[in-house]
Length: 363
Image 1 (cartoon, rainbow, N blue to C red):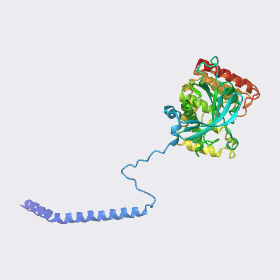
Image 2: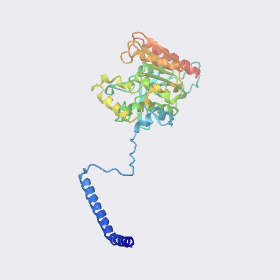
Image 3: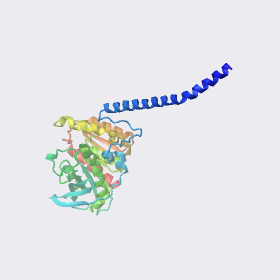
Image 4: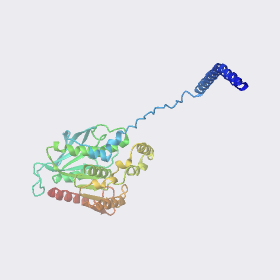
């Protein structure tokens, strides 16, 4: 009996205690919530206004803009250049065998001026296989010239005169920012990248010049113009016979950094521009040495051993690299000749004339 009574009493005590226990638990939970809330508010007040809390939803950061990517060799190779206007503006000189004209042609980035030489006579069919109403054309690509000293024709006019006297139309663009051309971009590297694109546009527009046979195109280039010519031969893949005089043939950006000691600031500005560029872009996509296998053209290279601007070893190495690809490449070296191939200029230009005439008959 005692055991039964105790059990009954304990059960009653348990039932009587339940409401009180529940109330205590509720009060404890409420108190804990208040403490946690106050602590959280205290911590939030301690966080500086400049700091932000991480969101459980990820924020997508947009990729940086790459406006110069369109000038990469793969992108230019995939670009279609349609014929745009090309105009003879005014006659600027009359020689015994040709007339020189100021011309201009349109590009996506503005009008580019330059000099065109038009032979006065029709070439005999024994010299050129093409129809005699339209003449072969040599695209003349100059090297670096200080902008303050530049005038249309500088860097190409002497060689152009020889070709024009022998029946070739010659076209020498000034490039944007030079001569009577529209201004060039303010970005130093963009100005450089634009030059191969401007020659590609000129090639596409040649059918709009009535005197020219667009199937008989040749290319002559000097110094930095040689790098532009190589770029055009790679990107276009066209078998345009080309003569390169002391070409700058090193990879980008070394091809421009090599000359920074000549700048007034010893290259500080250009080095910074290159560093900024390489933080966004792959410079390998803008370098000629990675695309030699795109070239199909026969090439002549002329190099003076006393050149103080383009080391002769560069042209030797370039020739070896191109010949490894089984390309038709000939290197002529001129002992003691300078950056303009003096005193061997006459020999070099005679070789070019012979080269172009033979290729004109074959093509």
